[in-house]
Image (cartoon, rainbow, N blue to C red; front, side, top):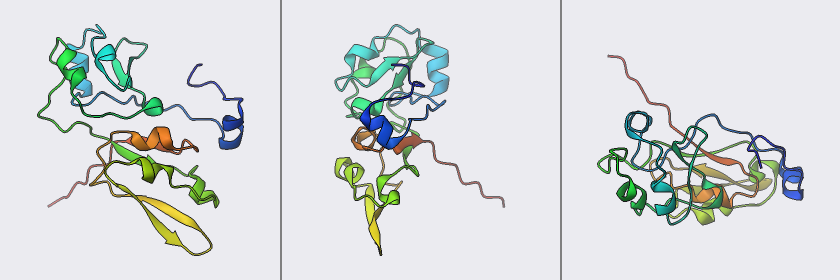
Amino acid sequence: MNSNAIDLGRRGFLTGCRHAHADRVLPPWSRAASIAAACTGCGACVPACPPKIIALDADGRPSLDFANGECSFCGACAEACPEPVFDRSLAAFDHVATIGQDCFAGRGIVCQSCGDACPESAIRFRPRLGGPALPELATELCTGCGACIASCPARAVSVSVPAMEVTHG
């Protein structure tokens, strides 16, 4: 199924169509510059990934799909790559989870699936009067592993690179 196709099943009807994101999610310890400079598109990282979340995009470059699982930070992708694409001295990911407006809790439906799935307890729930608790992300705890994405029945969780704070002196 094309990622831009509309899901006509029950889940798609109840949760709305999933919006395609232009930004691809890169494998751990890789950056766009290293992929552009060194990746040959050989695909050695794809079968090496135990949770099977790495796939080659239309350009033959690796990207992650958290729809079926999370990154375990095992490093198998980096070990399998014959090129200098991965740098394990870097943080694994630049991104963190983002909880969107389609979250069930915001629509009055009790759900804490993302928080239950998070191995770092980065998603906590703030109680509120008259409705279910709302999720809040502690970005300093989020590893970007993607565990919360596959568990979200509303498909309201994605990843994004946080904006950098700039101070002018």
